[in-house]
Image 1 (cartoon, one colour):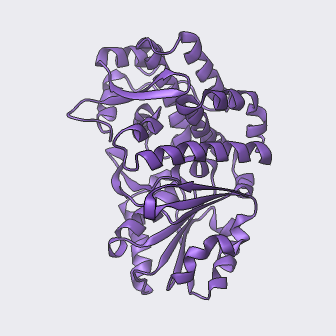
Image 2 (tube, rainbow, N blue to C red; image 1 turned 45 degrees about the vertical axis):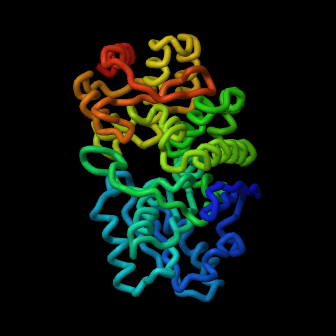
Length: 360
């Protein structure tokens, strides 16, 4: 097992990465002082891991309940968030209640937002079971739900007290979900660590096969990169925004297609192809670099050709983005492989990218 720390002063917390961690009660010691424990999961994950986690948490001698939500991005909304609050209120949860998010990014985001909101803030633990959640969404305290007009536009920064990434849960992922998570792994190399991107490129087959050793390194290095960025800029006032490389285009794809049609990682992967093309048009990276990144994304069995919404529709969708300031859309671009920045870009150059990549 590997342990990292997200350094946020008195709100610092550990990230545990290893195998069979769901069964290790010592990793859940934060539950010791809780009055009750609520596992929030979904209809897909619950039959696989909910009972094992319940058995582990019951060792603390506290009441343990399970809240099961429907599975999918399309359910990341007010209606399903309300189901968590309904259960907490019905069964007498209080300010010492611990929430435990058991699932992928949707469950982690919704459980975290519920924890941030219930009684104005209670504690929660992340137990991510998808690759995307282990390498990205479970770390950093971003929580929230989607709105029909924009992804993740309603939420709060609320840090977990621990992240417990059990690599064995990745073995039950469908190939499409695994590939979606690899998009975020590729992103970390592209924006912050060129040698890591080289390693990803060389180990694509092992990653797609969910080889435990390869996956362990991918999760560890991704969490190291994200932890360092979050520790330096918790609430995305500066450098943390670079973690959104590919996301402005990607969120537009998700909203335009309808949430759930493309997985988040699929949209981000394709969004990085657009982001790399834009970076090239701004004379930062070479055409060869942009093509290489596209090939790496394609090698992870991710889409590289965006849906054809047309330039006007893309621009409308991207206007609803958390990085937009004063009506100006700000994009994450690559200054070089392994280094990113955020800046405003002339619409004409964005439209050229949309046309060149088949989006317009």
